[in-house]
Length: 498
Ligand code: NAD
Ligand code: MN
Image 1: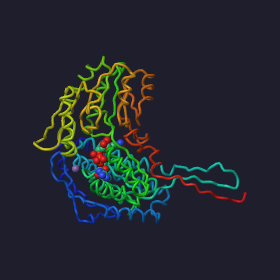
Image 2: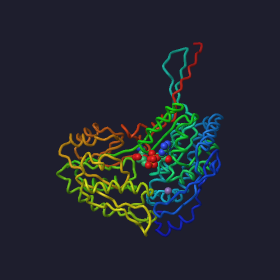
Image 3: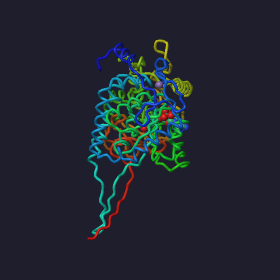
Image 4: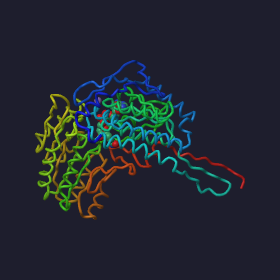
């Protein structure tokens, strides 16, 4: 697959049979209303598929199916080793269909197909495998009560877990939620983002093929204000795992308060700082990763390193290296392995990015990119863009742009760098570049974020939790800690004659 040419990928894309129906209770079905919406390829503007437009009626059906499955125990009371076998089969099926899974995300939201084929789709298989392998190795507790009393403290599944996910990593965001929630024994109702529902629907089909029983994994594509809100307010949803914007994360907390006090786990926006000190010995590596940290996935990454704080003595040298890297990262057809960046997810997001860029050209110093472009006369593409001399209070340094736009700010002292890095409503991730070990540890300690990467950016693995502080939310995906979100502690106290 990695030796495919542009022509090979196009030929394979043309052969895909898109699944556009909702997946409820083990079957593909139309929306109750019969309505559909178009799934669009942002690289071309073409309609890929008509997708079921689910609303509250479909959510009711999916939640009821999830509840029936949970109550009769077809999954929730399956032996952990048997659930493991099913999820391992699902991981294998994702690997067997890697090319299609990669194409679905690339076509639907514009990411490079080579990234989708080497990062997103293998990642999805890996995360399902990882949680599958966990679940028959988790032991519970016996409380130290003394003779005559046996108190078992167990982690039990919650029931119906709803997941509402964004479009930037459609398959992986669905996977991060569903893999852990299913492994823990819950039923899942997933609402993928309306911009990119196709991979989630295929995932549900593969899950059924792997042996996930009917009703245990349901996918209800649709819009946020209808299907998303119906899940948030549903009296039969026990837990809502959300990844998306901070504004909507807050709304889900309100939905919970207005309904059944369901657990809500928001993982929301970011404006992650990347701090480069002059004592970082490999400035080329810092430049490579700073560029990757903002241009990978068109900058549509919640933890994108969008604020670059550089010690003044090396600022000009680093910016020069970054300009060269920006120029080498030109967007192109996502299906062309020669392209270095893909398309922005849709017209609305592209226009939003361009508003920030246009305002920034007045307040800061545009040193690379800055233009919207079209490929073969079509599509939503933005050049990799760098602003130097950005003010700390400029929207370029404050707001999540969610596009390939880097803001560079110089600093003079370590304390100043830490203060500016922490001066944000967000706290998802941060990076620090230095070869001074004490400084690395000291600065890492002071940054109010969920993950600090030292001499790299965006360190992430199945083994480590991912999530934020402050208004980046408090949910944690990945690692065994994610299972805590999808289970409740339950005490069973047994009195016996001793
Ligand atoms: P969004 O909040 O607009 O949408 C996310 C999801 O919420 C979608 O499925 C959408 O349909 C749904 N939604 C929208 N309005 C809703 C409403 N009123 N009620 C219920 N549901 C609603 O975000 P987006 O633009 O799709 O994604 C980009 C955002 O996601 C960025 O802010 C980014 O930082 C964040 N993100 C965060 C993480 C993380 O792990 N912290 C990961 C990826 C993306
Ligand atoms: Mn789309």
